[in-house]
Image (cartoon, rainbow, N blue to C red; front, side, top):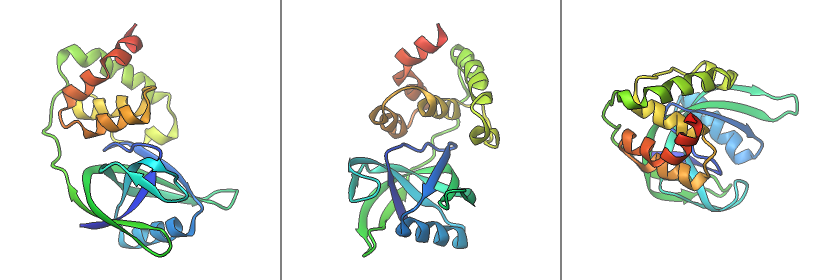
Amino acid sequence: MEIPLFPLRTVLFPGGPLQLRIFEQRYLDMISRCLKADSPFGVLLIKEGSETGRASTFDIGTLAHITDWYQGSDGLLGVTGTGTKRFRSLSFRRENDGLMFGEVELLPPPSACKLPEEYKPLAKILRGVIDNLGSLYEDLEKYYDDAGWVSYRFAEILPINVAQKQSCLEIDDPIQRIDSMRAVLDMVRL
């Protein structure tokens, strides 16, 4: 499967929100094509380089489906998306305008995993936090009993660096993902 790729300095998780302000022509064209075809684009974390120039990226990313768009008062295109499936980038090519396209394979979705009893207090904390995060999270479907969903939301909102967030994205097992954030989560629970 070949998709347009959007290298960013952020990690998008399945089920999570993404807000972008688009000003480069290559990405305006990409968003237009995705909207017309109702197709996703891939978000990959930048290893080196910049969002506006050339960049090297990690191989594991997340498909983003556009859920809303608007023109801001500053004239820039605003886009809201939601992460859907994780993928592995196998190869990429760069168009003349700099837009990257990648040959990707979708990673198998993790098996459904009920949130273990010992982590139920984390779901309660998460519910309170998400209720206070505003409009970006109000339309997201919420699954507080699902260990995968809860672990992705914590990886999204906890004050960990992007390399740690990328590591969380690459972990298949949701309980292992929660455990990888244990030190930060323990501070949250105090």
